[in-house]
Every structure is written in structure tokens, then in C-alpha cells.
Length: 168
Image (cartoon, rainbow, N blue to C red; front, top):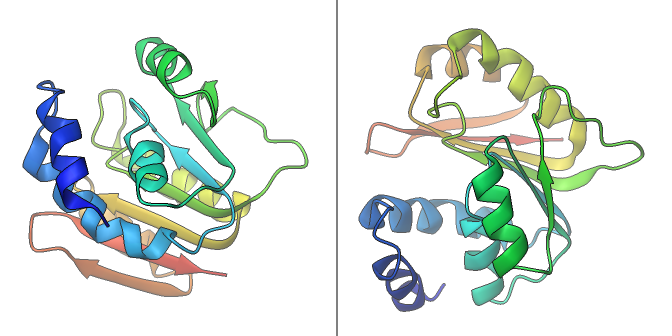
């Protein structure tokens, strides 16, 4: 993983919490570098797609987000991935599945609440063929309780977040 490139990327984007995001990519990257296709739930400005591509992970990538500005930016600046303006809870993916379904602090955003936890994880599990990765800092008790229903592990990252890895 090229941490210097990631640091330069965030240095040019002052609206991000640079150190926090760099730590998140270092946490998640090893789980995704062998992925064959990825769905990023709550993709924001497509940072995960960028980090993976910059580090040699070039696989079919789909990002979904509710915020029109996020998806518009992604469509303008990153033409390889598929970008969907939509809600993961209502969006259908007919005939599609993804090797890896990932969400990084999606539940922390505005408009999400604790009852969203179980349906989000269930939808991610249904769409994934190999693994679900969830890095989150909100609703941690509900996440721990829900994820115990699936095979995998939950660990604290030491930064007020939990990393959940669920495996089919």
C-alpha cells in the first residue's frame, strides 16, 4: 500500500479528516486486495476506489451513495467504476452479486439510525458472495449484536471504531 500517495491525495482535499481516513484505508486494504468485485456502500467521493486503483487493485467496482454531489464528483473524476445515486435499502441489483461488499462509516452519516444496522448488514450479506467488511464508529452495540448472527469476527481498531469481517 502506497501511504505517501494516499497522504498526498488527502492533502489536496482539505474537506477530509486526513489522518483518520489514511488509518481506515490501512485497516481495510489487506482485506480487499484479493477481491474480484467490490460494492462500496456509502461510497462518498469514491475514495476507496481511488485507493485500491492506486495500489494495483483493479477489479469491477460499484459505489452507491445517497448524496448527489458525491456521485456527480465520482462520475466526473473516476470513469472506470459504476456509480449509483441511490439508497442501499431500496436499490435492487438484479442478477448482480459482489465478491466483497464494504461500508466504511456509512451509518455515521446524517439520516441513519440504530434500526438501520440489522437491515444494512442483512442486505450487504445478501449481495456478497465472499465477504462483508464494515468499519464503523456508530451504533457499536447494535453492530456487535447483529454481526454475531454471521460467521466472521469483530475487533476494535483502537480508535473508537469496530472492524467487522463476515465470511460466506
